[in-house]
Image 1 (tube, helix red, strand yellow):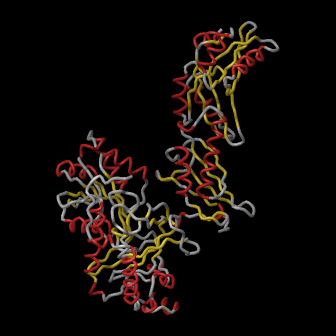
Image 2 (spheres, rainbow over the protein chains, first blue to last red):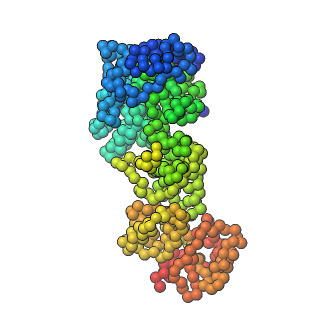
Image 3 (cartoon, each protein chain N blue to C red):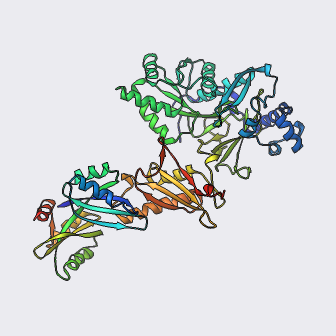
Amino acid sequence: MSEFAFENRIWELDETLPRGELQALQVERLRQTVARVAEVPFYKAAFAKAKVTPDKIRSLEDLARLPFTTKEDLRQHYPLGFLAVPREKVVRIHGSSGTTGKPTFVAYTAADRELWANLCARFLVAGGLRPKHLVHITFGYGLFTGGFGLHYGVEKVGAAIVPAAAGNTPRHIMLIQDLKPQVLIGTPSYSLQIAEVARAQGVDPKALGLKFAHFGGVPWTEDMRFQIEREFGLMAFNNYGLSEVIGPGVSGECGLRSGMHIQEDHFLVECVNPDTLEPVAEGERGELVFTSLTKEAMPVIRYRTRDIAWLDTSACPCGRTGARMSRVVGRTDDMLIIRGVNVFPSQIEEALLRVEGTAPHYLIEVDRPGAMDVVTVRVEMRPQDFSDEMRQMEALRERIDREIQSITGIRVDVELVEPQTLERSAGKARRVIDHRREKGLI
Amino acid sequence: MKIKQLSVFLENKPGRLSVPCKALAKAGLSILTLSLADTRQFGILRLILKDWEKAREVLQGAGCVVNVTEVIAIEVEDRPGGLADVLKIIEKAGVNLEYMYAFTFRSEDKAVLVFRFEDPDAAIQLLQSKGVNVIGSVELFDRAKR
């Protein structure tokens, strides 16, 4: 049985709405949202095609009649083609970096910004933030939503902020040493950078006195959480969001930290098979899809996040009734379709983790030499996994083989390779080589 | 009585064996004996060297995955049935032998073999009690010099 490490305080009572009431509220709000976006050109056309009008929305099942929205759709209506209110009503524009050059813009009305602050306050309070705290924010303040969103949330709670923003690690360390904040906000990887630089300066990261950290903005692992908590002697919390939906504040962990509570009174969530777009069973991996329920400036209908996670609607002892989502375990862009089965590199990693404790370096190679897809997983050997006995080595290979099969449902060839032989580009590992793509087979 | 053995992971690809061998040669370390076990995809090179600690460093420096295990060196009579006699003792006692290989040198009418047991201490006790000569590292490297 998990226990709370601190008092379980709840920011807004709406977080604990019984699920029946919550669903009734969602239907009502979905209808309002459909009405609100009815004049947005993209939705106007899509609704006409699907013959949907607001009065057709009578239950949550009716969500299935609505069209999906993709990042590409937003891009095609650059810069503000998805605005559902007159430009004068907009008080803020943020953007997410585009890999193709131009960002995707999102907009907020005054009410949206207020909502955003409240949603961030919810997960911050759930993760231990109190008005007495001093908070050090290492997120950049700019078009990116991370800095401002968390800033508003902390302000809402009534705690004090050091808006240190991105960059210059020694300066961060100096500020933390001198001002003694209890809470750190930023990306998990940056906190490790702070720890490393601190140690290089002869400063024990634990001596910095941080007690809580709220991380988001990038996918991270449970391994990293343990490492960060050990380094700093703090409790780290995960939160999730994306600018197209609102920014941070879509979901966040409570004190029990077994999944992130989705703020379902403001966002409808679906978890779908990215190929068929059909819902997956609860607990199964799929692509998260969000529909705004209360946003004014730029509501999105069934926005495909391309983030892979799973959902859990079981009751949480903390009292919050919002469904919990897992960490983001992959992106649909990383998904491989092998003999008709969806496979994510993170599943291979999970199998290796189960067999060897921590995941070694690996590479997934997919090819189609004949009619069938063939997958080879190359795993770099490490001293702790290596044995002088052939029997043990074969057993290791078989265990990896079995775990991969039990997690993904497909058979692969496992090859053990020498260390440092798998390609690394700029320190980041390349996880997949799909020869089928080079051959034009997919 | 136990002797340190280095084992090195190798991919079963042309030229892979020469990497550890070249590294040891460059460091002036000579290999007393070795064995290579291999499958279609990978192999395990096992080495006995006098200065195994230095050798381990050299091999790790060359990017190899290296393990150290304890093996024992056993003297058997160099005649038909010499090895069979020793194996009979091992078999009878139900001691688990993982693998074995030989040294290239011999003294008088005796050959020396490397045995890897699951439990080397129990094996030493057993063999000595049956009058088998288990050779310690000092004597082993001494004999190799002769």
